[in-house]
Image 1 (cartoon, rainbow, N blue to C red):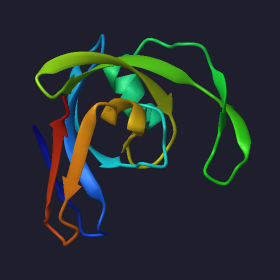
Image 2: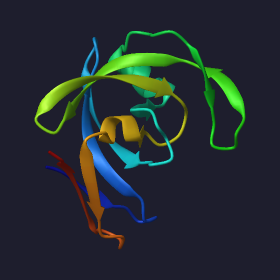
Image 3: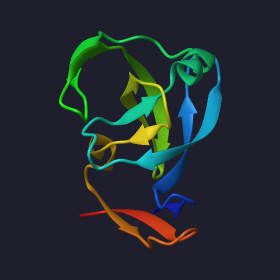
Length: 122
């Protein structure tokens, strides 16, 4: 089970450990079920971690516009293992998307400080 909290603006969040070639960093990421990728990180975090680049791709944003954005590769401590994921470089709060949540169930208590629990399904 992975545990997190609901923040002061009622977003379900998890603390993640991200590993790059330069270092590792603990981040707090918002769960975004409208994002179907694995993880987003801002450029300064990607640079600090020394994440290796993947191919840039065209993506459709929440406002239905399309942009070519940069992707990187990172290892994330997820549940009980290290998992390699594609990271989309976008500014703003780090986001956890549904690709990382695949095979898991989310339960959240939506009050400030409420619990967030991610559990694997069989």
